[in-house]
Amino acid sequence: MLALLKRFDPEAYANRWYLVMVQPTLLHSIAVICAWGSRENEYQRLKFLPMGTEAEAEALAAKIVAAKLKRGYEPVEL
Image (cartoon, rainbow, N blue to C red; front, side, top):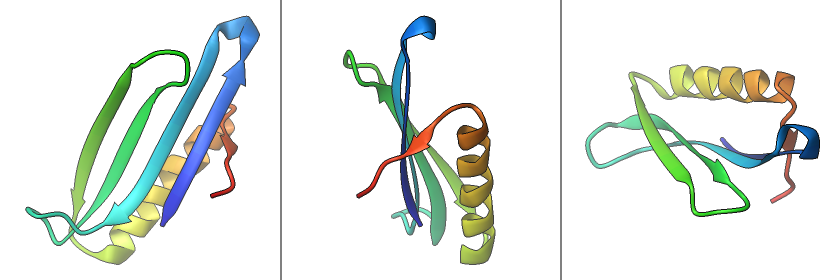
């Protein structure tokens, strides 16, 4: 899974992006990787969430994307 989301709300001064990926890492067999930041400056963050199975990772990634969509993020076509 790979999902790129954006949120633009000038009234709330929000111009943000959010990326969710499921992929193997060097230390874990599978992980959910979340990255987020501002589209107006250099602010960025990255978080790795190790998972036991790929099915668990896909379910968590889908849950994260659903929560972001509820908060006003919109999908970006890749």
